[in-house]
Length: 430
Image (cartoon, rainbow, N blue to C red; front, side, top):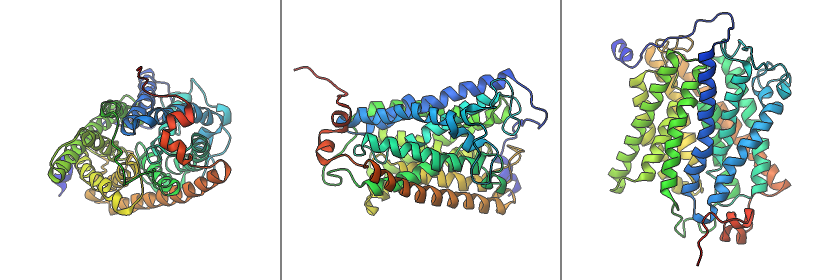
């Protein structure tokens, strides 16, 4: 067993804890990674989701991702970053860093990174906060009002994402102190958004005509382009989480690519076997499923484990997406099947395959003689699921009471592009 485990772990150079010092290469890599993660939301996720909806709703879908970049960025600077990462209680940070007070553009904050300026770390984490609520929009595509979407999103980021980020990554956060491993957001980003998506799909209800009329994607070229941008941007998401231009970044980069590749193949193979034809949408969905699953493990596992994690994710998420019809909820763009299921598997798999040979700052998983790590990972998963589902359900109810969640039937019938924004994505002259 030891020989097999060693084959699944590749040692990576790790930074030795010491006195904080500015490093230009690390800072440049983190800023580049921030750009890559921003690219995942706009245009990556926007195009990925936009191509999968019907033509009459493409602009409204693109707008949801685009406007969240602006909204969440301002919230993050005003108080979100402070709630998520400043020293506070075990459950939420304080307002010490509100308005970026004390967040230096030149000096590192040693508790998070010893070699990059505090503001560089802040803006990198901002891009994570931006994309997480944007992921939820796939579940309520084509029927949620823009006003309801805005109100829910700002409340969700403040009351769900920020505290959960503090639990897992913040100084003194209780899940962090428990020893849970989440390198780049399996619990914070994917489980939280996937579970919130399930709550939203249940609360908002199915699209008009769901299961009675065809609702095919209107532009799979757009979707595949978005998937490609997500794949490229994900290297900033995962390898950037090393916070340094070092061997750990290299290891996470390789693991990320292999996880996505393996999942693409297993998803396509599964649908080819069951449905008789491989599809472009399946390949794109499989890649994203693999990227989701490898995210929490990317900085703790070697290449072999990454292939296993991604391979299982492709088949597992494919099965989960096929199962949604049996439960009757309308998760329009498969957020639950890909992000919730993929994130859960990835977080648990971290507890199986993690190795200190890859990251000395992490821990060994079950296959390296530490079964307790799997228990810790499972606890973090269950806490994230419960917090996001219950909290999101409450916020959805509050939003519905304040401004309403869903557009009127007539507005949904003509499409949200016209009814919510008075615009059309495609103008054809007679």
